[in-house]
Structures are given as structure tokens and as C-alpha cells.
Amino acid sequence: VMGLVISNIITTFMRLKKPERVTVSIECCYQNVGIATSVALTMFKDRDLAEAMGVPLYYGFVEAFILGLYCIGAWKLGWTKAPPDAPFCHVLGMSYEVYRAEKLELESVEVQLADDSTACDESISDLGDTIFAYFSLDDDEMDNRKEPSNLIEMERQREESMRSIQA
Image 1 (tube, helix red, strand yellow):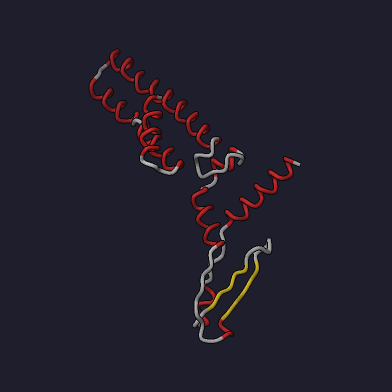
Image 2: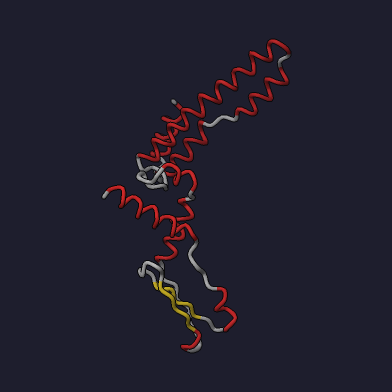
């Protein structure tokens, strides 16, 4: 627990972003139980081995419990990239870093020059909030256009379900 507190204080003074603080704190506090187990296996025999194996096993359970509570607390406080109001199963199953990168990419503007107006293909997103315009100098490149992944659709469904729950 002291390691989490100290690492959070140090990363705050270093002015790291909150998700980075969480990552550094977990990495500072997470000790490799496997190393302790292998040391116990090589150093002890028989009855002493049984007692020695209890130490890393107990420490591993306590460590997993405390870090689990810390992760849930950091998530609910908005210190992670996952929204605090997202369902727990979504948080476990979705990479919000990829989702944010794709969302930012879709909100950005990309301009390419074409040699004529026939080298353009446009489409509108399902929600009607994004226009995709593809320009190409070669006809072959029109087949290589970038489409958003399923993460955007999953997040839209999550937002709709949150709205229906609140209503």
C-alpha cells in the first residue's frame, strides 16, 4: 500500500498523466511472485519447502487483491482511459487506447491531392456525423481505403444502452 502511495506521489510530481500514473504505480508495486516461488523451491526441502511456499502464495493473493482494488478505484476516479461510467465487462474487454486513437483519427482531416475529380469516392458514416472522402491518383488505390473498426460501433452501442438505462 505504501508503494502505491509513494509511486503516485512521485509520478504526480513528475507531472505524468493520470493513466500513466496508474501504470507506473502498478509496475512499481507488482512483485514477481514467480521469482519468489522458484527461489523457495531451490532453497528449501521437505517441511521447510511447504512453509516457504506459503509466503509467495499468500503475498500473491494479497498483492492481487490490493492492486485489483486500486485499479477499480483508479477507473472509477477517472484516472484510466476507460470512462468511469462504462460497464465493468466492457472495461475488461475493450482496449480504450485503441478506441481513442481511432476516434481521434476519425475526427481528423486528411487531405490528398488528386489529378482529376473522378479519382474521388465519398461515403457518410451510419450516424451521419462523418464524411469519408477518398482521393486517389490511381484507380487501384481506391480498394485500399481505411474503414473504422468495430470499436466505434461497440462504443456507440454502449452509449445508447447507458442512455436507455438513465431514461
